[in-house]
Image 1 (cartoon, rainbow, N blue to C red):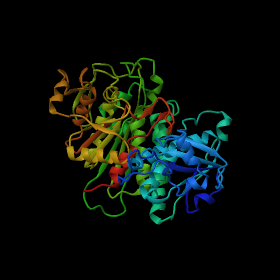
Image 2: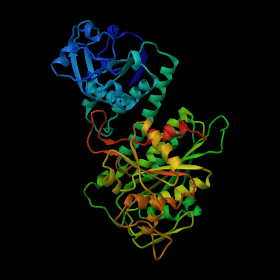
Image 3: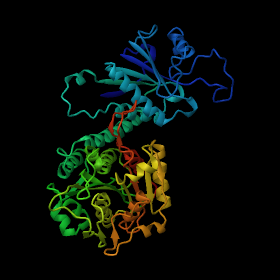
Image 4: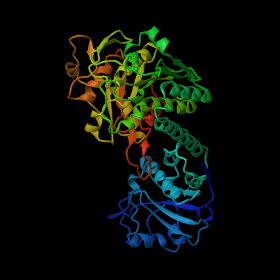
Length: 509
């Protein structure tokens, strides 16, 4: 799919569909507080559109067929006064509240609706105060994210008939900054779709070593350093927590390490680590999960896919600081070799861990990876993991949980998420929660009991970051959509990747 900027006026665009953003009419006045007459044409992203199409825009508003509310659409075939085959009004909600988050969702909604109708070419027009860098970047992201389908393994030939080939963003002037915004949005969205593609893959086609192969190929394509620590190397390093999880599977584990180094000398010694849980399939091990819903456990490597995808974007966008990704990858299986409840393992850091529940495996592999990141010289750490079911009980599927040992760093991560429309919610991390993590037989148990499950999992991880500023994102509630949205396909979301990218790009020492 090609997205290009054009300065061709809306009236001259020959396309399958011309899309105009349209907004709710102000009830009491416009954004300046001025009362508007009831017969004032509604505001759209194309100046003079209502007059050009003979008042049709006003008619659909008057008939309440279209109100301009967010993600609402209405379509007119063969609009008079235009060269486009169709005119689409796409609801942006209140104009005063329309921003990048709304633009991203609206773009995805429009694309998915037009693709379903067999439209292969359309144009989206921006005039006036909508033709900004931020809106163009968000629209590019929304269009590319909306085009993603988790159907790579379907053989139905009909799906090839419905494909978007070209989208034109019509702007008054195709400036260098708008061109760069389009490039940036494209890079970020393609990286997010790369992550979603990895998470979609079933466990028989995406083992730990096959995930490492994908990461290595990506690194070679985009100029990143790549190192894969195999099972033998991790045994040398005494990654006892990670290897304990992996021992029940016939599939060998690995630790993927991807490095980005800025071409210019960084102004500080800061070095950001992105760490992602990579359990390519999670049966729960000996503490086996119920069979219902277990097929979704291929998504338990979403954290690893997220950091790999983030590195794909950062390699092209070039943040001012070094960034290294660490993705510990295992398969958690029951077998005669599998880790048992009650086993005690020794982590890379040296702490002993009593494994009370083999289904709390993500924190075990992250423990060794986080310590390794610190000892590789990383000064700030952010990890993403589908870590606990408890996070969805607490937050539903709208927010990811945030846990940290450093309020300043946590604030930066939450601010980055807010800018990118990724909702994050901070949880308490008081030292009193350590009382839930006591073992009579080892330094730590790997679970903390029934209460505060997401918090105690995070407190467990905190033991392995060696006091470096660290943020943990529990994405178990947001990494997967059970039902499609108007702007987004069912399945993996890739959420939290944009937070990581924004954090690195806006880094201040």
